[in-house]
Amino acid sequence: MDTTILWLKQNKDAIESLGNIITFIAVILGGIWAVNQFTIKREFASQVEFTAGIEFIGVHTDYWIIEIIAMVNNKGGSHLKMHEFIFKLRSIENENLEIGEKKVNFQIVFPRKLKTGSWFPPSWENTMLEPNTEVRYSHVAHIPIETTFLLLHGRIGYLVGFIFKAPMFHTADRVFRVPTATS
Image 1 (cartoon, rainbow, N blue to C red):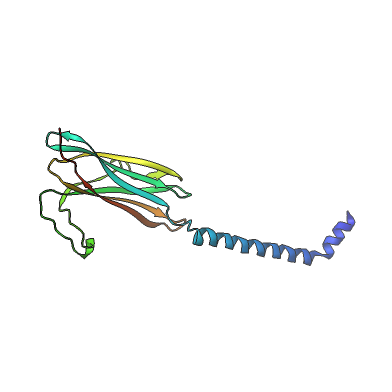
Image 2: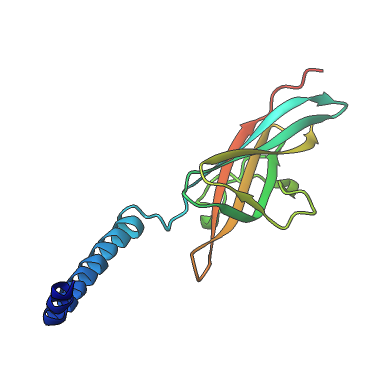
Protein backbone atom coordinates (compact mmCIF):
# COMPACT_ATOMS: atom_id res chain seq x y z
CA MET A 1 0.00 0.00 0.00
CA ASP A 2 2.89 2.34 0.75
CA THR A 3 4.20 1.90 -2.79
CA THR A 4 0.81 2.89 -4.26
CA ILE A 5 0.66 6.07 -2.17
CA LEU A 6 4.26 6.87 -3.06
CA TRP A 7 3.52 6.33 -6.77
CA LEU A 8 0.42 8.61 -6.58
CA LYS A 9 2.49 11.36 -4.91
CA GLN A 10 5.23 11.07 -7.52
CA ASN A 11 2.75 11.20 -10.44
CA LYS A 12 0.38 13.82 -8.98
CA ASP A 13 0.90 16.25 -11.89
CA ALA A 14 0.35 13.54 -14.51
CA ILE A 15 -2.86 12.39 -12.79
CA GLU A 16 -4.16 15.97 -12.63
CA SER A 17 -3.33 16.45 -16.32
CA LEU A 18 -5.17 13.22 -17.18
CA GLY A 19 -8.22 14.48 -15.21
CA ASN A 20 -8.10 17.77 -17.12
CA ILE A 21 -7.91 15.92 -20.46
CA ILE A 22 -10.91 13.74 -19.52
CA THR A 23 -12.87 16.86 -18.46
CA PHE A 24 -11.99 18.59 -21.75
CA ILE A 25 -13.14 15.57 -23.79
CA ALA A 26 -16.41 15.42 -21.78
CA VAL A 27 -17.08 19.12 -22.46
CA ILE A 28 -16.44 18.63 -26.20
CA LEU A 29 -18.73 15.58 -26.35
CA GLY A 30 -21.43 17.47 -24.40
CA GLY A 31 -21.17 20.35 -26.85
CA ILE A 32 -21.52 18.00 -29.82
CA TRP A 33 -24.58 16.42 -28.20
CA ALA A 34 -26.15 19.86 -27.54
CA VAL A 35 -25.54 21.00 -31.13
CA ASN A 36 -27.09 17.77 -32.40
CA GLN A 37 -30.18 18.01 -30.17
CA PHE A 38 -30.94 21.72 -30.48
CA THR A 39 -29.57 22.70 -33.90
CA ILE A 40 -29.75 19.65 -36.12
CA LYS A 41 -32.76 17.87 -34.51
CA ARG A 42 -34.39 21.23 -33.51
CA GLU A 43 -35.53 19.84 -30.13
CA PHE A 44 -36.23 23.40 -28.97
CA ALA A 45 -38.86 23.89 -31.70
CA SER A 46 -42.47 23.01 -31.12
CA GLN A 47 -43.63 19.77 -32.64
CA VAL A 48 -47.34 20.40 -32.60
CA GLU A 49 -49.89 19.25 -35.14
CA PHE A 50 -53.13 21.23 -34.99
CA THR A 51 -56.21 20.68 -37.16
CA ALA A 52 -59.72 22.10 -36.99
CA GLY A 53 -62.95 20.78 -38.42
CA ILE A 54 -66.73 20.94 -38.40
CA GLU A 55 -69.25 18.12 -38.18
CA PHE A 56 -72.80 18.88 -39.26
CA ILE A 57 -75.06 17.17 -36.73
CA GLY A 58 -78.53 18.03 -38.03
CA VAL A 59 -81.16 20.68 -38.67
CA HIS A 60 -83.29 22.10 -35.85
CA THR A 61 -85.95 24.64 -36.86
CA ASP A 62 -84.02 27.27 -38.90
CA TYR A 63 -80.52 26.26 -37.76
CA TRP A 64 -77.85 23.68 -38.37
CA ILE A 65 -76.46 22.19 -35.15
CA ILE A 66 -72.70 21.83 -35.67
CA GLU A 67 -69.72 20.55 -33.71
CA ILE A 68 -66.57 22.66 -34.04
CA ILE A 69 -63.63 20.32 -33.49
CA ALA A 70 -59.95 20.86 -32.72
CA MET A 71 -57.36 18.08 -32.77
CA VAL A 72 -54.00 18.80 -31.11
CA ASN A 73 -51.14 16.32 -31.31
CA ASN A 74 -48.02 17.04 -29.23
CA LYS A 75 -45.29 15.14 -31.07
CA GLY A 76 -42.54 16.73 -29.00
CA GLY A 77 -40.59 15.35 -26.08
CA SER A 78 -41.94 17.76 -23.45
CA HIS A 79 -45.37 18.88 -22.28
CA LEU A 80 -47.21 21.65 -24.11
CA LYS A 81 -48.96 24.27 -21.98
CA MET A 82 -51.56 26.05 -24.12
CA HIS A 83 -52.81 29.40 -22.83
CA GLU A 84 -54.81 30.42 -25.91
CA PHE A 85 -57.22 28.13 -27.76
CA ILE A 86 -59.67 30.15 -29.82
CA PHE A 87 -61.72 29.89 -32.98
CA LYS A 88 -63.56 32.25 -35.30
CA LEU A 89 -66.37 31.10 -37.55
CA ARG A 90 -67.31 33.21 -40.58
CA SER A 91 -69.74 32.57 -43.43
CA ILE A 92 -70.93 33.42 -46.89
CA GLU A 93 -74.65 33.25 -47.46
CA ASN A 94 -76.23 34.92 -50.48
CA GLU A 95 -73.66 37.70 -50.93
CA ASN A 96 -71.69 38.33 -54.09
CA LEU A 97 -68.16 36.97 -53.81
CA GLU A 98 -65.63 39.56 -52.78
CA ILE A 99 -61.87 39.20 -53.14
CA GLY A 100 -59.91 40.40 -50.14
CA GLU A 101 -56.93 42.69 -49.96
CA LYS A 102 -53.24 41.95 -49.56
CA LYS A 103 -53.53 41.22 -45.80
CA VAL A 104 -55.65 38.13 -46.63
CA ASN A 105 -53.53 37.26 -49.67
CA PHE A 106 -56.31 38.25 -52.10
CA GLN A 107 -58.51 35.33 -51.01
CA ILE A 108 -62.30 35.24 -50.87
CA VAL A 109 -63.79 37.29 -48.03
CA PHE A 110 -66.23 35.60 -45.65
CA PRO A 111 -68.10 38.73 -44.51
CA ARG A 112 -70.41 37.37 -41.80
CA LYS A 113 -69.03 36.82 -38.31
CA LEU A 114 -71.03 33.95 -36.87
CA LYS A 115 -69.15 33.00 -33.73
CA THR A 116 -65.97 33.70 -31.83
CA GLY A 117 -65.18 31.34 -29.00
CA SER A 118 -62.76 29.08 -27.22
CA TRP A 119 -62.35 25.36 -26.94
CA PHE A 120 -61.42 25.99 -23.28
CA PRO A 121 -64.25 26.05 -20.75
CA PRO A 122 -64.62 29.59 -19.31
CA SER A 123 -63.02 28.57 -15.99
CA TRP A 124 -59.75 27.38 -17.60
CA GLU A 125 -56.75 29.68 -17.99
CA ASN A 126 -54.70 27.02 -19.77
CA THR A 127 -54.34 23.32 -20.37
CA MET A 128 -51.37 21.00 -20.65
CA LEU A 129 -50.79 18.30 -23.23
CA GLU A 130 -48.27 15.60 -22.39
CA PRO A 131 -45.67 14.40 -24.95
CA ASN A 132 -46.81 12.07 -27.71
CA THR A 133 -50.47 12.69 -26.90
CA GLU A 134 -53.34 13.61 -29.20
CA VAL A 135 -56.49 15.23 -27.79
CA ARG A 136 -59.84 16.13 -29.38
CA TYR A 137 -61.67 19.27 -28.21
CA SER A 138 -65.26 20.10 -29.13
CA HIS A 139 -67.59 23.11 -29.12
CA VAL A 140 -71.27 22.74 -30.09
CA ALA A 141 -72.89 25.68 -31.87
CA HIS A 142 -75.59 26.54 -34.39
CA ILE A 143 -75.56 28.40 -37.72
CA PRO A 144 -78.40 29.80 -39.84
CA ILE A 145 -79.85 27.24 -42.22
CA GLU A 146 -79.32 29.56 -45.23
CA THR A 147 -75.54 29.52 -44.74
CA THR A 148 -73.75 28.09 -47.78
CA PHE A 149 -70.04 28.16 -46.89
CA LEU A 150 -68.10 28.44 -43.62
CA LEU A 151 -64.56 29.52 -42.85
CA LEU A 152 -63.18 28.13 -39.58
CA HIS A 153 -60.05 29.75 -38.16
CA GLY A 154 -58.45 28.18 -35.08
CA ARG A 155 -55.43 29.31 -33.06
CA ILE A 156 -53.46 27.83 -30.18
CA GLY A 157 -50.94 29.88 -28.25
CA TYR A 158 -48.21 28.58 -25.97
CA LEU A 159 -44.77 29.45 -24.59
CA VAL A 160 -41.51 27.73 -25.52
CA GLY A 161 -38.07 27.90 -23.99
CA PHE A 162 -36.26 26.84 -20.86
CA ILE A 163 -35.38 30.08 -19.08
CA PHE A 164 -36.77 32.80 -21.32
CA LYS A 165 -40.21 31.80 -22.57
CA ALA A 166 -41.08 32.98 -26.08
CA PRO A 167 -44.70 33.11 -27.27
CA MET A 168 -45.52 30.80 -30.18
CA PHE A 169 -48.74 29.92 -31.94
CA HIS A 170 -50.19 27.60 -34.55
CA THR A 171 -53.24 28.23 -36.68
CA ALA A 172 -55.58 25.97 -38.59
CA ASP A 173 -57.94 27.29 -41.27
CA ARG A 174 -60.48 25.36 -43.24
CA VAL A 175 -63.44 26.07 -45.54
CA PHE A 176 -66.61 23.94 -45.44
CA ARG A 177 -69.58 23.62 -47.74
CA VAL A 178 -72.77 23.48 -45.69
CA PRO A 179 -74.91 20.48 -46.72
CA THR A 180 -78.35 21.02 -48.18
CA ALA A 181 -80.80 21.11 -45.29
CA THR A 182 -83.06 18.10 -45.04
CA SER A 183 -85.11 17.74 -41.89
